[in-house]
Amino acid sequence: MAEKKKLGVFASRSPFRPNPIGLSVVRNLGRQQTVSQLSLKVGGIDLVDTTPILDIKPYIGYADAIPHSHSGFATEKPGARWDIYFTDFALEALAQYQSDYPNLKAFIVSVLKQDPRPAWRQRGDDRKQYGMTLYDFNIKWQVTDGHVEVQDVRDAQTIG
Image (tube, rainbow, N blue to C red; front, side, top):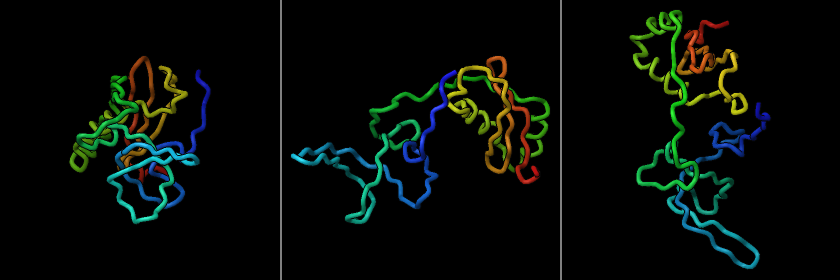
């Protein structure tokens, strides 16, 4: 099993940050080197003059989805790795929410195909039950026998 490596919020592309900073997609216009300073030139930015740029993350085309853009980092979208199955119990629960959430099952499948487990756990079956919240639902699932099995879909408000 790979070593679990901590990654800070400022090293990730997470929008959940401890301060209210703005996020913008900008165009890389190149760099400028002087004797004592290296500067990155950016364009298409939506900020007020003299606002500092605190952090730069690479553009990921399949995640950021800006038409006619270019990504030089992580250029290929990860493939769908798993077949997703629902237990009868989970299918019965989905049926209860069908009228208000007609695409809930497809949404669950699309998220789980990306294997949202921690990276150090993404080495095949681990028989651990995972939980996640999508919309107002708590989804319980497990990787078993080379596929993902959704075991429960429950309104998060009813969980105590």
